Image (cartoon, rainbow, N blue to C red; front, top):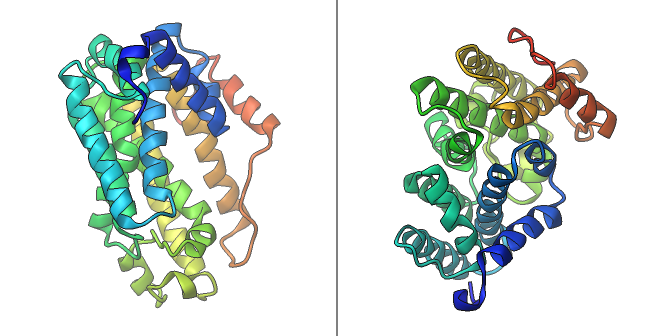
Length: 294
């Protein structure tokens, strides 16, 4: 956060956010391109914020540096809401927060999620702990995105955002068990690990005979979350939420492919081809079937 704000124009800050998205090589960018320019700029600014705090949590430095970096971002959120941002992404966020009335508490929740990772690693949380994490790591991003998409501020829209956030995060967890274990992380809930007599340690989980059953149980919960999001969508304007639905279609496809292959240990990480992603995106340029996205 060292760049001086007084020499950074709003246009330069917007370019900074856009470049952050491009450097990340994320599929996020494709979904945002269907938005109007102003809405797209807002989503780029939100993404840049999420990327920067996530990078702080994931960096290899000492915990004291991670704490300091995330504390600085807590202060930056306060600065932005006072109209005085002090870093490029803060400048990029300023106009968007005002334009779309973005809630400050959701930015703080994102930071809290990164603090959970930084203070971790997270290992075998309880269900309550896992969903406290997904609310911060994914749900808060959804809650920030909904006003930008143009969704109404209703309980139904909130239920869609939070259910979809849980579903996406659980799907990521299911895909990344082995990668997370290498980093000393284990996001699978303790209750399921104990139910299937699995060790509660990342070092041992990847070869545990009970791991496939744990994954199957968690996949069932992820499917329930996708279904809950779909049920909420029935009362919302799907065209407004098309960027979120692109993500929903992609991640449901990941879950379907993992389920169809089975959960045996030692298999490579499931990937989607570019053609598969294009096919999923194409479905959302026609009226969707609410009973089944894929």
